[in-house]
Length: 477
Ligand SMILES: [Zn+2]
Image (tube, rainbow, N blue to C red; front, side, top):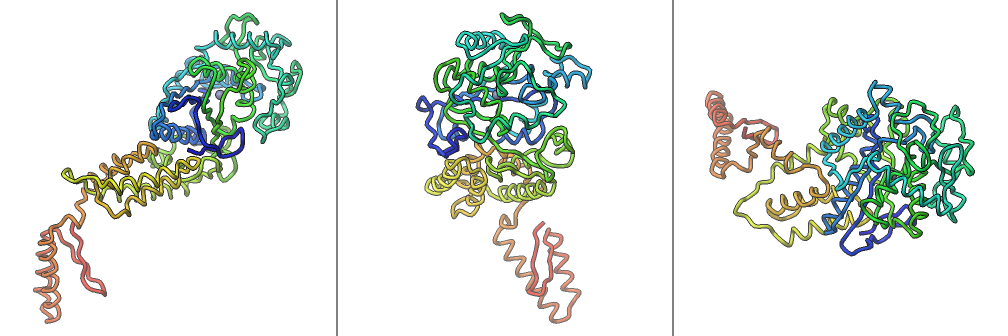
């Protein structure tokens, strides 16, 4: 498979360190509020990537953290503590908030068919690991103490800005002018590994450490949680493009300084979901959650379909109208699939199956082109083969796409109780056509009583006649 790597800024052949195995790390949510659908876009695309890697035969181990401590409102370690802010807002403890929004996050994932990673680790469960890595960084001279906090010294690196799209100026993005610069930092890009002198006196969660009573910075948690479960080498690291800088840049700085070698080979970043007014965020405009979509009558699968319709490296514009279009497309697709009839005795046409699968794979092998992969389903519907083969292909693709197509098609068939016209026997259709001709003859003879009697006779048998300029058509109810 060829995958765009944000580090090299090129599409590269994906070759994991150990043949057949993939170690994959994903930055998890900060659990201080509901996830908005912009965040969930990243998790959907990462889910497709993980499922595709499994589909082509890799043994994937995927790890995700849950940020329940240390994440400030600006990713550059300034502003308020997000968890504390959430707790104050809802008059709860930080741990109550963490539990509630962790559960809410996984409930949303379930609705969107996002598989739970093999390992999910909350930051508060790994404090000894954080302390251990910070000690190593201090010993090796990559970290320093200032004003009670421990900082990473970015000037010790040959190259700190590893994702070339970002520079020092980007550190100011998202930082409000009212937030004071941290005077303890030796270099503007330095970041906190451990806080003891917090501006937040009411910080609830603090731990003893060799650096004093305090709590970890945000970035250190991903480096340590990845190391705990996946060792010193990662094949693939994922996240939203927002995380590339400073968060992922800092993760690389910490991990590679600790290990003394390259850490993660491929970086997969999902781009923004924008509203017509710009980047989606919790603070701006309507707070778009999965529950809100449901309240407005959208099945979460429609949102998944909407996301798959666009490449993960393009910004996607969300509007209710765009979502409505995705809904129409999804429902049409489901209706088409529901008209396929499985023949329990029938076989699968292996040639057509291989042909359909090839198209699907070539779409995803090319930097996870999900919109082409969805198109491959429409191609299956047009294949000159039996319905068993078509259904088998759709079921096979849906292992990766996760659109619940077969289940929805079955529900659709039940709801509409569809007995498609093609199901009527040839004999019955011949009978209807004969009656239509008799009725036409009666009309020509101006015997309207007979014409009406024929119409009623058919109606009783569940056949409605529709007179059109080109002739009479019929609908079997
Ligand atoms: Zn992370």
